[in-house]
Amino acid sequence: MELDPFMKKKPDSIKSFIASETPEIRKELKKLYAIIKKAAPKATEKLAWQMPTFHQEGNLIHFCSFTKHMSVFPGGDAMKLFKSQMKGYTTSKGTLQIPYGEKIPATLITKMVKYNLKYNLNRAKTKAAAKAAKKKKKNR
Image (tube, rainbow, N blue to C red; front, side, top):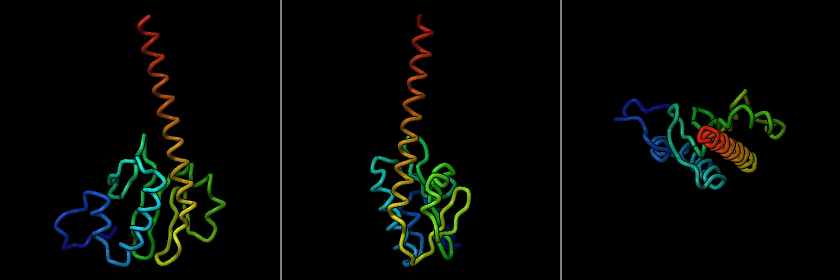
């Protein structure tokens, strides 16, 4: 996000982040937001590292706007797993760039969010079970 120097304060929510952008970029970010929200309807919304973030038992995905593209940051594991579906996009270890005006890869983003959600829920379940076992052992 390129913060307007005349803005009085930084955005404090995903909605204010989107609202702070130009109408053209705002339109694209709203589409991306809807795709992510549909994939993880129970996720908490927040700003992390000044980027819109969806969180449920851990971060699911971040996104951000730039001059010529928006980027999604699903994490390295999701990027590796779905790399073959990213042909034609600029990528890095943890980032997928989507140029403005191009079709947003909704199916791919949905798969990455759901993958991260499943991973986070399994990790939370495993941690809870380990904690319960430790507590049970301690109470013997």
